[in-house]
Length: 75
Image (cartoon, rainbow, N blue to C red):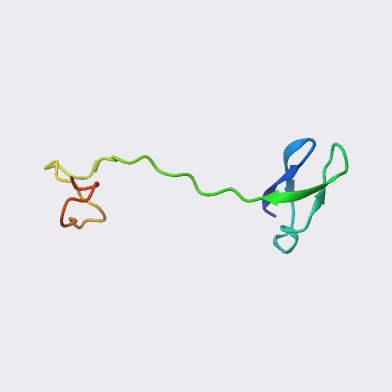
């Protein structure tokens, strides 16, 4: 079963193992017993300016294809 993060207004964030069907249901905080709502976390942003390690000529490439017109990955 997956692990989800929940936020108690008094105690802070805690995690719990729950069924997917129950993930959005309120859960009692294990410390104080208050209702806690699930916290959704966005995917992290990747740093820009990554280099292409697979290119021996030093030209920027993405997915084996070269972009056209001044994109940030092909420079």
